[in-house]
Length: 185
Image (cartoon, rainbow, N blue to C red; front, top):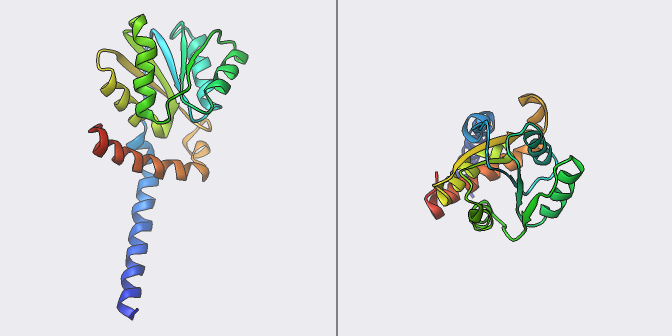
C-alpha cells in the first residue's frame, strides 16, 4: 500500500468518527419519541430489557393508564412477567415467540385482537421508541398507539452511559434495515 492509501484510510476513519459522534450526540432527537396516552386498553411491554421496562410498565399500570399488561418477546418474557408480578401487576399475559420488533407487533396483534383494543401503550427503551411505534402502527393501523420510553437514569446525562452507545448504533442500523425490508420509517 502506498502513502495515498494510508491517507485515504485515515480520512475515512476521521469521517466515520465524526459521523458516529453526530449520531450519538443527536440520538435522543432522532431515536426518541414519547407519545402519551391518558388511558389505554392495554400496556404492551417489549422484551429485550427486563429492568427499566418493567418499572415503566408497573408505574403506568398503577397510575391507572390501562387495566391489563401484555409482554412480548422471546428470552426474557417470563422474567418480565415475574418481575411485573413482584411490582404488583397481576396476571400479565405473555407471548414468547417473537425475536424482532416486527414479530413483536405481529404476534401481539394475533394475541390481543380478539379483545378488540382501541388503544395500546407501548413500553420500551428510549432509543427503540421511534422504530417500535412505527412498526406497531404499520402492523396494526386500526389501533391508536402511545409509547412510553424508559431510561437507564433520571436525566439524559445520567442515562447516556457508555454501554448504550452500542444499542444506539444498533438502533440506527435496525431502523435503516426496517426501512428497506418492511418500508417502515
